[in-house]
Amino acid sequence: MDPDLVSIQEARDLAMNAREAQKVWAQAGQEQVDKVCAAMADAAFSASARLGQMAYEETGYGVPEHKRLKNELGSRGVWESIKDVRTAGIIRQDLAHGLTEIAWPVGVVAALTPSTNPTSTVMFKILISVKARNGIVVAPHPSAVNCCVETARIMARAAEDAGAPRGLIACMQQVSLQGTQELMNHRAISLILATGGTPMVRAAHSVGKPAYGVGPGNVPVYVDRSADLDQAARFIVASKAFDYSTICATEQSVVADAPIASELRQRMEAQGAYFVSMEQSVALGRLLFHENMSMNPAAVGKSAEVIAGMAGFEVPSGTRVLVARLNQVGKAEPLSAEKLTTVLGWYEADGWLAGCERCIELIHFGGKGHSVALHCRDEKIVTAFGLEKPVFRILVNTMATLGAVGVTTGLMPSLTLGAGGIGGSITGDNVTVHHMFNVKRVAYGTSQPPAAALKPGAQPNRPTPQQIEAVVRQVVQEILNAK
Image (cartoon, rainbow, N blue to C red; front, top):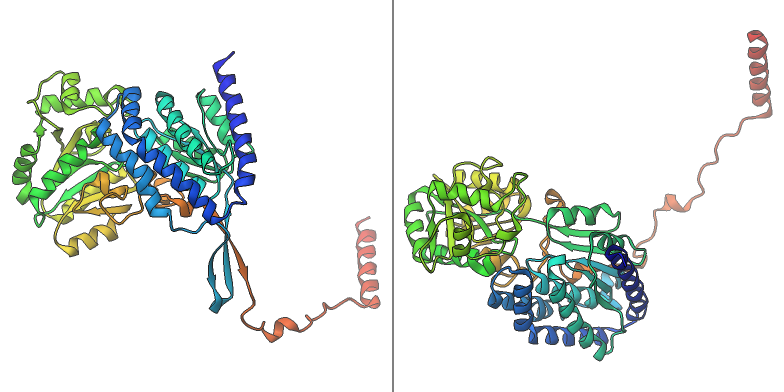
């Protein structure tokens, strides 16, 4: 059979099955919901290492051990952050204002997932969807089908063993563009949760259904003269090297305050950063990007040594990150864009105001609404960055990779990071369970209506018979005159 037709039929079947199962699940009480979700989180957490290895082998991206850490975040980390959230029945009462709030599930979620963080994203989306009493059908990236199917299978089995209806959780196995489009457009789907590249997110938003779509982030990191330079160097290199830069919140360019730029460079070199020559920088730009500025998939999620070899030069053993000195931002300088691999841009700016402006340039070149990082101990500068940057995560003195997803900060653990209206998203939040259900409100009268509202309204003035006759005579006369 035609693979596209098989994919379309699978999408239809899974969507309808999930809808029937969700009708049952919508009646579940909070205790049952939490029992099922806890079982899924435990099962996924236990399989984190195996699924991380599987994702690495199937996609060729990143570091298996780092994928295990992301899976642990997507399972236990996410569950710990949402386990106490009420999602069934009455969730809040405000007696003083006569309000009662009741959680109401959205329905069935179509979850589009990326190849860069496949298993961890599937874990996260299943947990937040089922916790909100929704069904979910995962549409994996074609290059990460097997690991996503296995992740969903493990969680579905745990859920069913704990009492969830069969079919509530599913993952497409026959993946095609036509099949994914059919899933998103299917009448049984109520919400689209899309994480991935710009084309995927645009497709999700074009369906005409509610959609959380989040895409790329060209995250700059400003290092101020007040920073702890040893920590900054250590965190930046480790963050960029983490899973070989496959998380969209990873630092993409360093903006170094001029007085400390030389020292920061030395400390980063001590952590495994290699500053490339101008010729090597040009070679990297040609390797990483096509003429239309789309990234070369073969270079995604690769080690610094592999990237250097692909670009035609050698680096010392143990090199973790390649750093290219840049002077401008835009298409004329490809390395100023988001680089989902172990290559960093490097800029120098004299003072935080100049650094701020450079960061804004970088954000506007592919990262609107996403994130910015800074290493700084001057709270006035931190506040200024928070007020002025057109992003929704300002990450201070931490690894941007782990800080943005909630590992090293107080942000909600999430593998889907909203970019707000400026970035084409409907939220700037770290998407979590609160975004996956609606709230009904029972509102009691708390005050008497205005007296005027209770009085009969004034009757409109009706024309008298004499007035009507006069108008008719006038019209007749005008007609006769016209003849």
